[in-house]
Image (cartoon, rainbow, N blue to C red):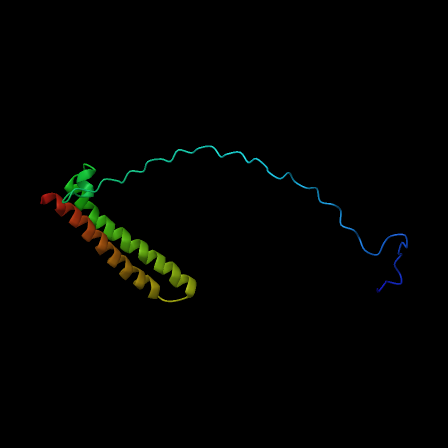
Length: 125
């Protein structure tokens, strides 16, 4: 066995260390039963009636719903153009991402416009 020459070794200690005895656990431990949990009854939401729109269900007016189309288009295009111009300033481009943002905003605005107009037209049937 290798020993350090500079370290002090107690010759009275045995070379190997004996492991202390591990206390034994009882054979059968009683584990308490967990408390009973009531499971909630989940109900499915009712489906919309065919031909009804979200505006009719909310008690909305068709004119008010139709007036939101223009505002939705303008805000969608404006917000996407603004985000694109921020990216242009950050990356040093000249109106590249602002134009991409305006086109993306127009596509998103037209999508919203079509959804709103379809919902309004469902009430007429």
